[in-house]
Length: 303
Image 1 (cartoon, rainbow, N blue to C red):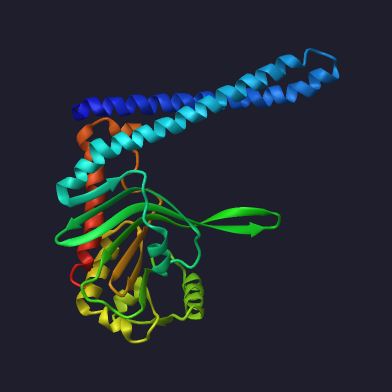
Image 2: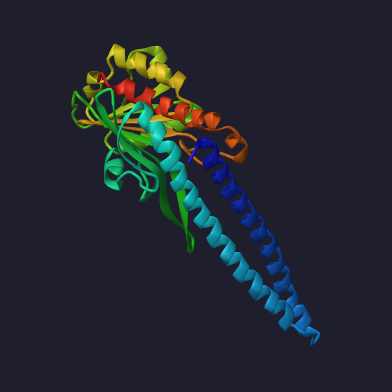
C-alpha cells in the first residue's frame, strides 16, 4: 500500500470516528431531554413509556458509538505505528523493538527518584533501539497518583510527556537529579528543594552561572555531582535547554540515565486531519520529533 493510499485510509477512519463522536453528542442530548420528560409526562398521566423507550434507545446507540470510537482509536494507532512510525524510526536507529501500546516498566521509573509521587503509569509508542552505539528505550508516559479528598478518590497527574532511559558508561554513586527551571518561579523551586532535602537530597551549584540559572541540581551524596557536572556536560545541557521544546527532568543513578521531557503534546501522536493532507509533511512531523529525542541521547553519550 502506497503512502497516499494509507493516508487516505487513515483519514477515512478519522472521519468515521468524528461522525461517531457527533452521534454520541446528539444521543447524549436526546437522552437528557427524555430523562427530564419521563417524570413530567408521568405526572400528567401521559404516555411516559415513549420518552423512556427513547432514553433506552439513545443509551444503547451511545454505548455502540463509544465502542466504535475506542475501536477506531486502537486501529489508527496500530496502523500508524506499523506503517509510519516504525519505518521512520528505522531510518535513523537500529530498531530492536517497537510496540505502540506498551510503556516503560513501573519500577525503574519509580526508582529513578525523579518524581516523589505516582502509583500508576500509562503510556504508548514504546521502542527500544541503538543509536551511535548507545542502547536506549523510550515511551510516551503519563504518571498519576490517587489521592483521597473527603469521601472520594481523585487521580492527580504528576507528569505527562516523553521518557528516555539509557545506560551510563561512567557509573556514579547514588543519585544526582538535574531539573530544568523553565517556566518555574523562585517560590516553587524553593519548595521543590525543601521536599528533596527532606528526602535526603542536597541542593548544590555547579559554579557555572548560566547553567545554574537554567537547572536545579540535587544530590544524595554531596560532592558526587562533580563526577557529572564537567564543563563538557554543562555545555551540552545548556545547549539542550535551547534545542528541546519541553522541560527536562534528568536522573543520573549508578549506570542509569532517565530523561523525562515534560510537554503537552505526545511524540508520535495521531495528528489532526489537516496535518495529514500530504504524506511527506506527515512523515516530517515524526522525523523532527525523533531528531529531538536523538539530540537528547547524543548529549549523554560522552558521560
